[in-house]
Image (cartoon, rainbow, N blue to C red; front, side):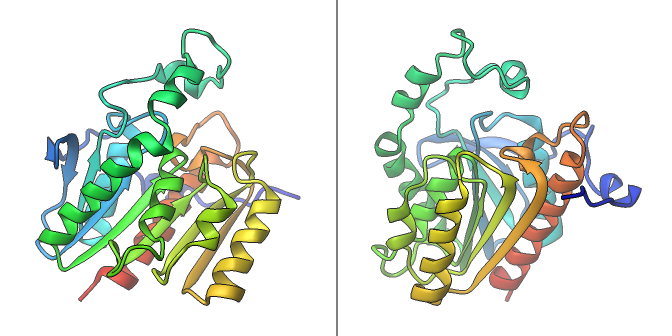
Length: 254
C-alpha cells in the first residue's frame, strides 16, 4: 500500500512550533489545561501517555477551541506523574527508567475511571453541549463516557483515536452517543480483530452514528506525536485534527 501524498498547506495548518495559548486551572480536583471561551459548548480532552503538559496535546486543544469554537478542558489524569517524553517519542517502551508496568498499575482503568466520569459530569453541569476526545490512554476513557449505562448521556459526541486498553466489552456496552473512530492502519493496541468487532457492534448492532476515519501506512500514536522524521505522520496528525474538528462542529454547534 502506497503512502498518500499531501500538499504543503496540510503542514502549515498546524502550529507545530507554536506556544499554547490556554491557561492552567482545575476541573473538579484535577489540574487542567483550559483553552477557548465558548460558554455553551465544551470538549473534555483525555490525553495519551505523554500527559496533559505535552506541547502537541495543548496545541491540538488550542486548534479544537479555535476551529470548532468550543472550550477545551484537558485535566491531568496521571496524578501528577510525568513520563519521559523523549524516551516515549523514541519508542523506548522497555526502558526500565520509564517503569511502564508500575505506571500502568498506578493509572489503570479502575483507578482513573471515576475521575474521568466526574470531569464529564462537571462539564455537563456547566455547558449546553459536551463532547470528548481521547488518544491512546484516553481512548478507553471516551468509550466509557459513551457507555449505555449513563442515562442521560454524559457527552453528546465522542472522538476515539487509536485507543489503548480498550476491550470488546467497551463496544458491546456502548450507547447511542455519536462516535468518530480515528484509526491508523498499524496498531497493535487496536488490532484488526477488535476493529472489526467495534465496527459490527457500533454500526450493525447498535446503529449509532459513526464516522470511521482510516489512515493507511501510519502507526499507533501518530495523531499526537506528529513526528517529522516518520513519513506521513505529520500529515496524518493534521488530517486527524481536521476530522475531529468536523465532528465537533456537527454535534456541538447550536
